[in-house]
Amino acid sequence: MTTNYRASSAVAITLASLASSSGLTVGRCSAAVSNATNKDDFVLPALRTRSGGTIVAGGGIELWAFAQRADGNWPELFTAAYTGLDAAFTVNNRDALLAGAVLVGSVAQTDATARDYVIRGRELSQVFGAVPQNFAFFVTHNMGVSAILDGTAGNHVLTINPGNYT
Image (cartoon, rainbow, N blue to C red; front, top):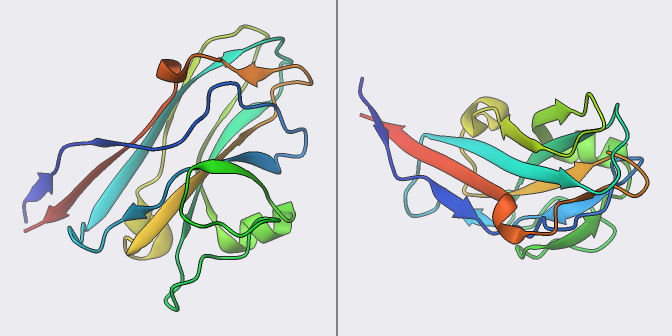
């Protein structure tokens, strides 16, 4: 069996100045990613982000993935319906997030220093059983009352590295 990687690509998500959410229920969803044409066997997500503002040690950043259902609808995770666009969202509650999405990676804030963080997420076919036809990501963090992610858009990138086996 041969592993064939395609070029990695950025996923549209606006993380600059994302505010902290003490309950990890407020964050940002990416634009939807379609696997309908390429039918990739695997997708490896990675998030690079930079903290900013006043940080409290003990918080962290979470990267979640969720998939469109077979009936063409997105799971009802948020207080407003997800429509496939990059936008701010609030989850109904953590139980809904745990039931309808998969935590693909997280990183703990261990000190009060603003710095870069990298999350190399779990491979999507492993967490979903197969790469979904359409999927998206949700990012949230709880690094302090006045903590935000850095305000420079170029300091945040969510990428996927897809491919297949032959």
